[in-house]
Length: 307
Image 1 (spheres, rainbow, N blue to C red):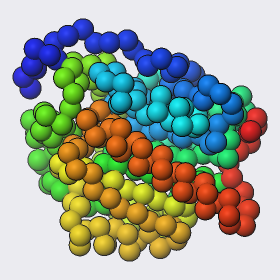
Image 2: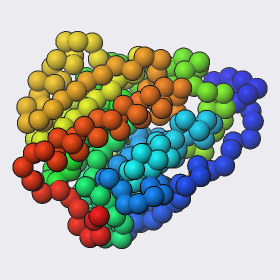
Image 3: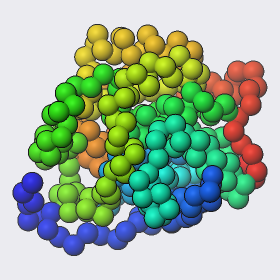
């Protein structure tokens, strides 16, 4: 990859104003992450942002332009936003250098939500916003964990758009992860160096198993779901027949919405379209909160100090 002169600038500050690092003890692990909370009162709800493979929680707090950060935007709109480093990333990488399988991570994430709620106001409950491999974890967690409010995921489908042998080609991987360079603000690829992390061995070992996993868990997802595919998404098939098959498997979800985002590559939250995507995701969450308020009460995952 060639880096333009504008990308050779020294990266800006590590976190946006109002965003702070935190640690959570969950399921025997120390998980790291980033947190932004509303400045003027308790949160409406808590958005839990789950990053993809080879990235870290900082993916959701892009530094090269103020419009990129999901954390600051969500907090301004009244949400607490918690971006967690998945097991095997960030602080927990030293404890489990080989990482965890997906079903093991799906046990840790709910424990992390409980640990967070014991010390923080979470409002109406937890909303999941996930990217790529994190979308797999969020879907599996939603299928197994009662009380979540809604899920918005980008960069995850159910049918690969590339053969497994091709996924080993580094140049191809870069193109599929990013798409055209012009989709990203100047400085993106320099700043992204601080966000990258090796995919743990155990996590990588089951990447190709996702289509079968999805087929098993899809009928058990029972919360509102929104899926976004970037215009230049290269990892997943997302033509109409593929999406029709995908949505037909989500038989228990009360709402399934699929959208395409123009002018975006796989790493949406670091691109010029980030603010558009984040606003649409938060608007979807607002809609889900309103619908839940009008519906008969159902248990939500809000133990501890919920507002």
